[in-house]
Length: 271
Image (cartoon, rainbow, N blue to C red; front, side, top):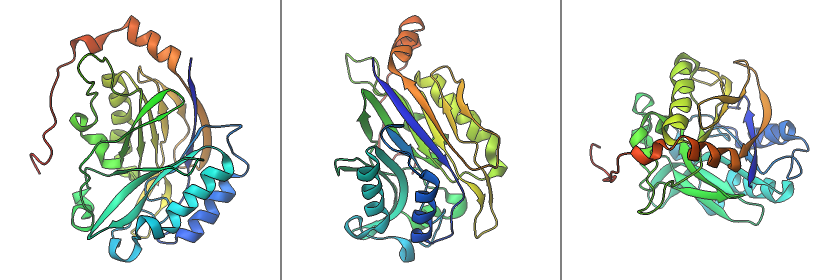
């Protein structure tokens, strides 16, 4: 059965300096490649920190140095690279999660829930579509930071006749230390309620606005048990294994999905 080796990259970020962050991350990653991992997960806005200067920092996808860097790294390392960057698309700006493959494919997800307490909803556009990608037999729901607080958006929505829509949730973040307990709790809650693995990658350090970040990056299994959980406030790279056989066996043994309520998402309602 399928396994998915996933590397969580918890690190500090240089403020609004993409080239410095690219170089910093290359040094941190060292020789990590497809022999060791299938997927490298970077924090939200890994190239700039959580900047609201979208007009100054965003670039079109085709001209984005950070998207090009992700593709170069994916090809050189022989594994998928993912993290979010500021992108301008037409007349709108997005906090866009990029999924870059060694074969040169780019898939993206635009952050749906914008953190209004920082004014993100005034500087970026709201994403309109959920995105599920596939890797090593795993279907993975993509999400960014504040999305984690909205369980309806992230809930399993299997098609008629299917039991599960995805096998794992991936969430990249710049989640401040002051709210570290909700971050940890919500990662585990999303895993339990969806009978899925959850990968949550957050940054450490302090940004230019004086906000501190504790990290608390977690790999959580389908029972809400942390498989990767390091002490707060330290940079690290850790690789864990998602096991499809163990996931399927638990879903069979504990079929809570049979009692789930079906629902339909209506885009834009409530916003």
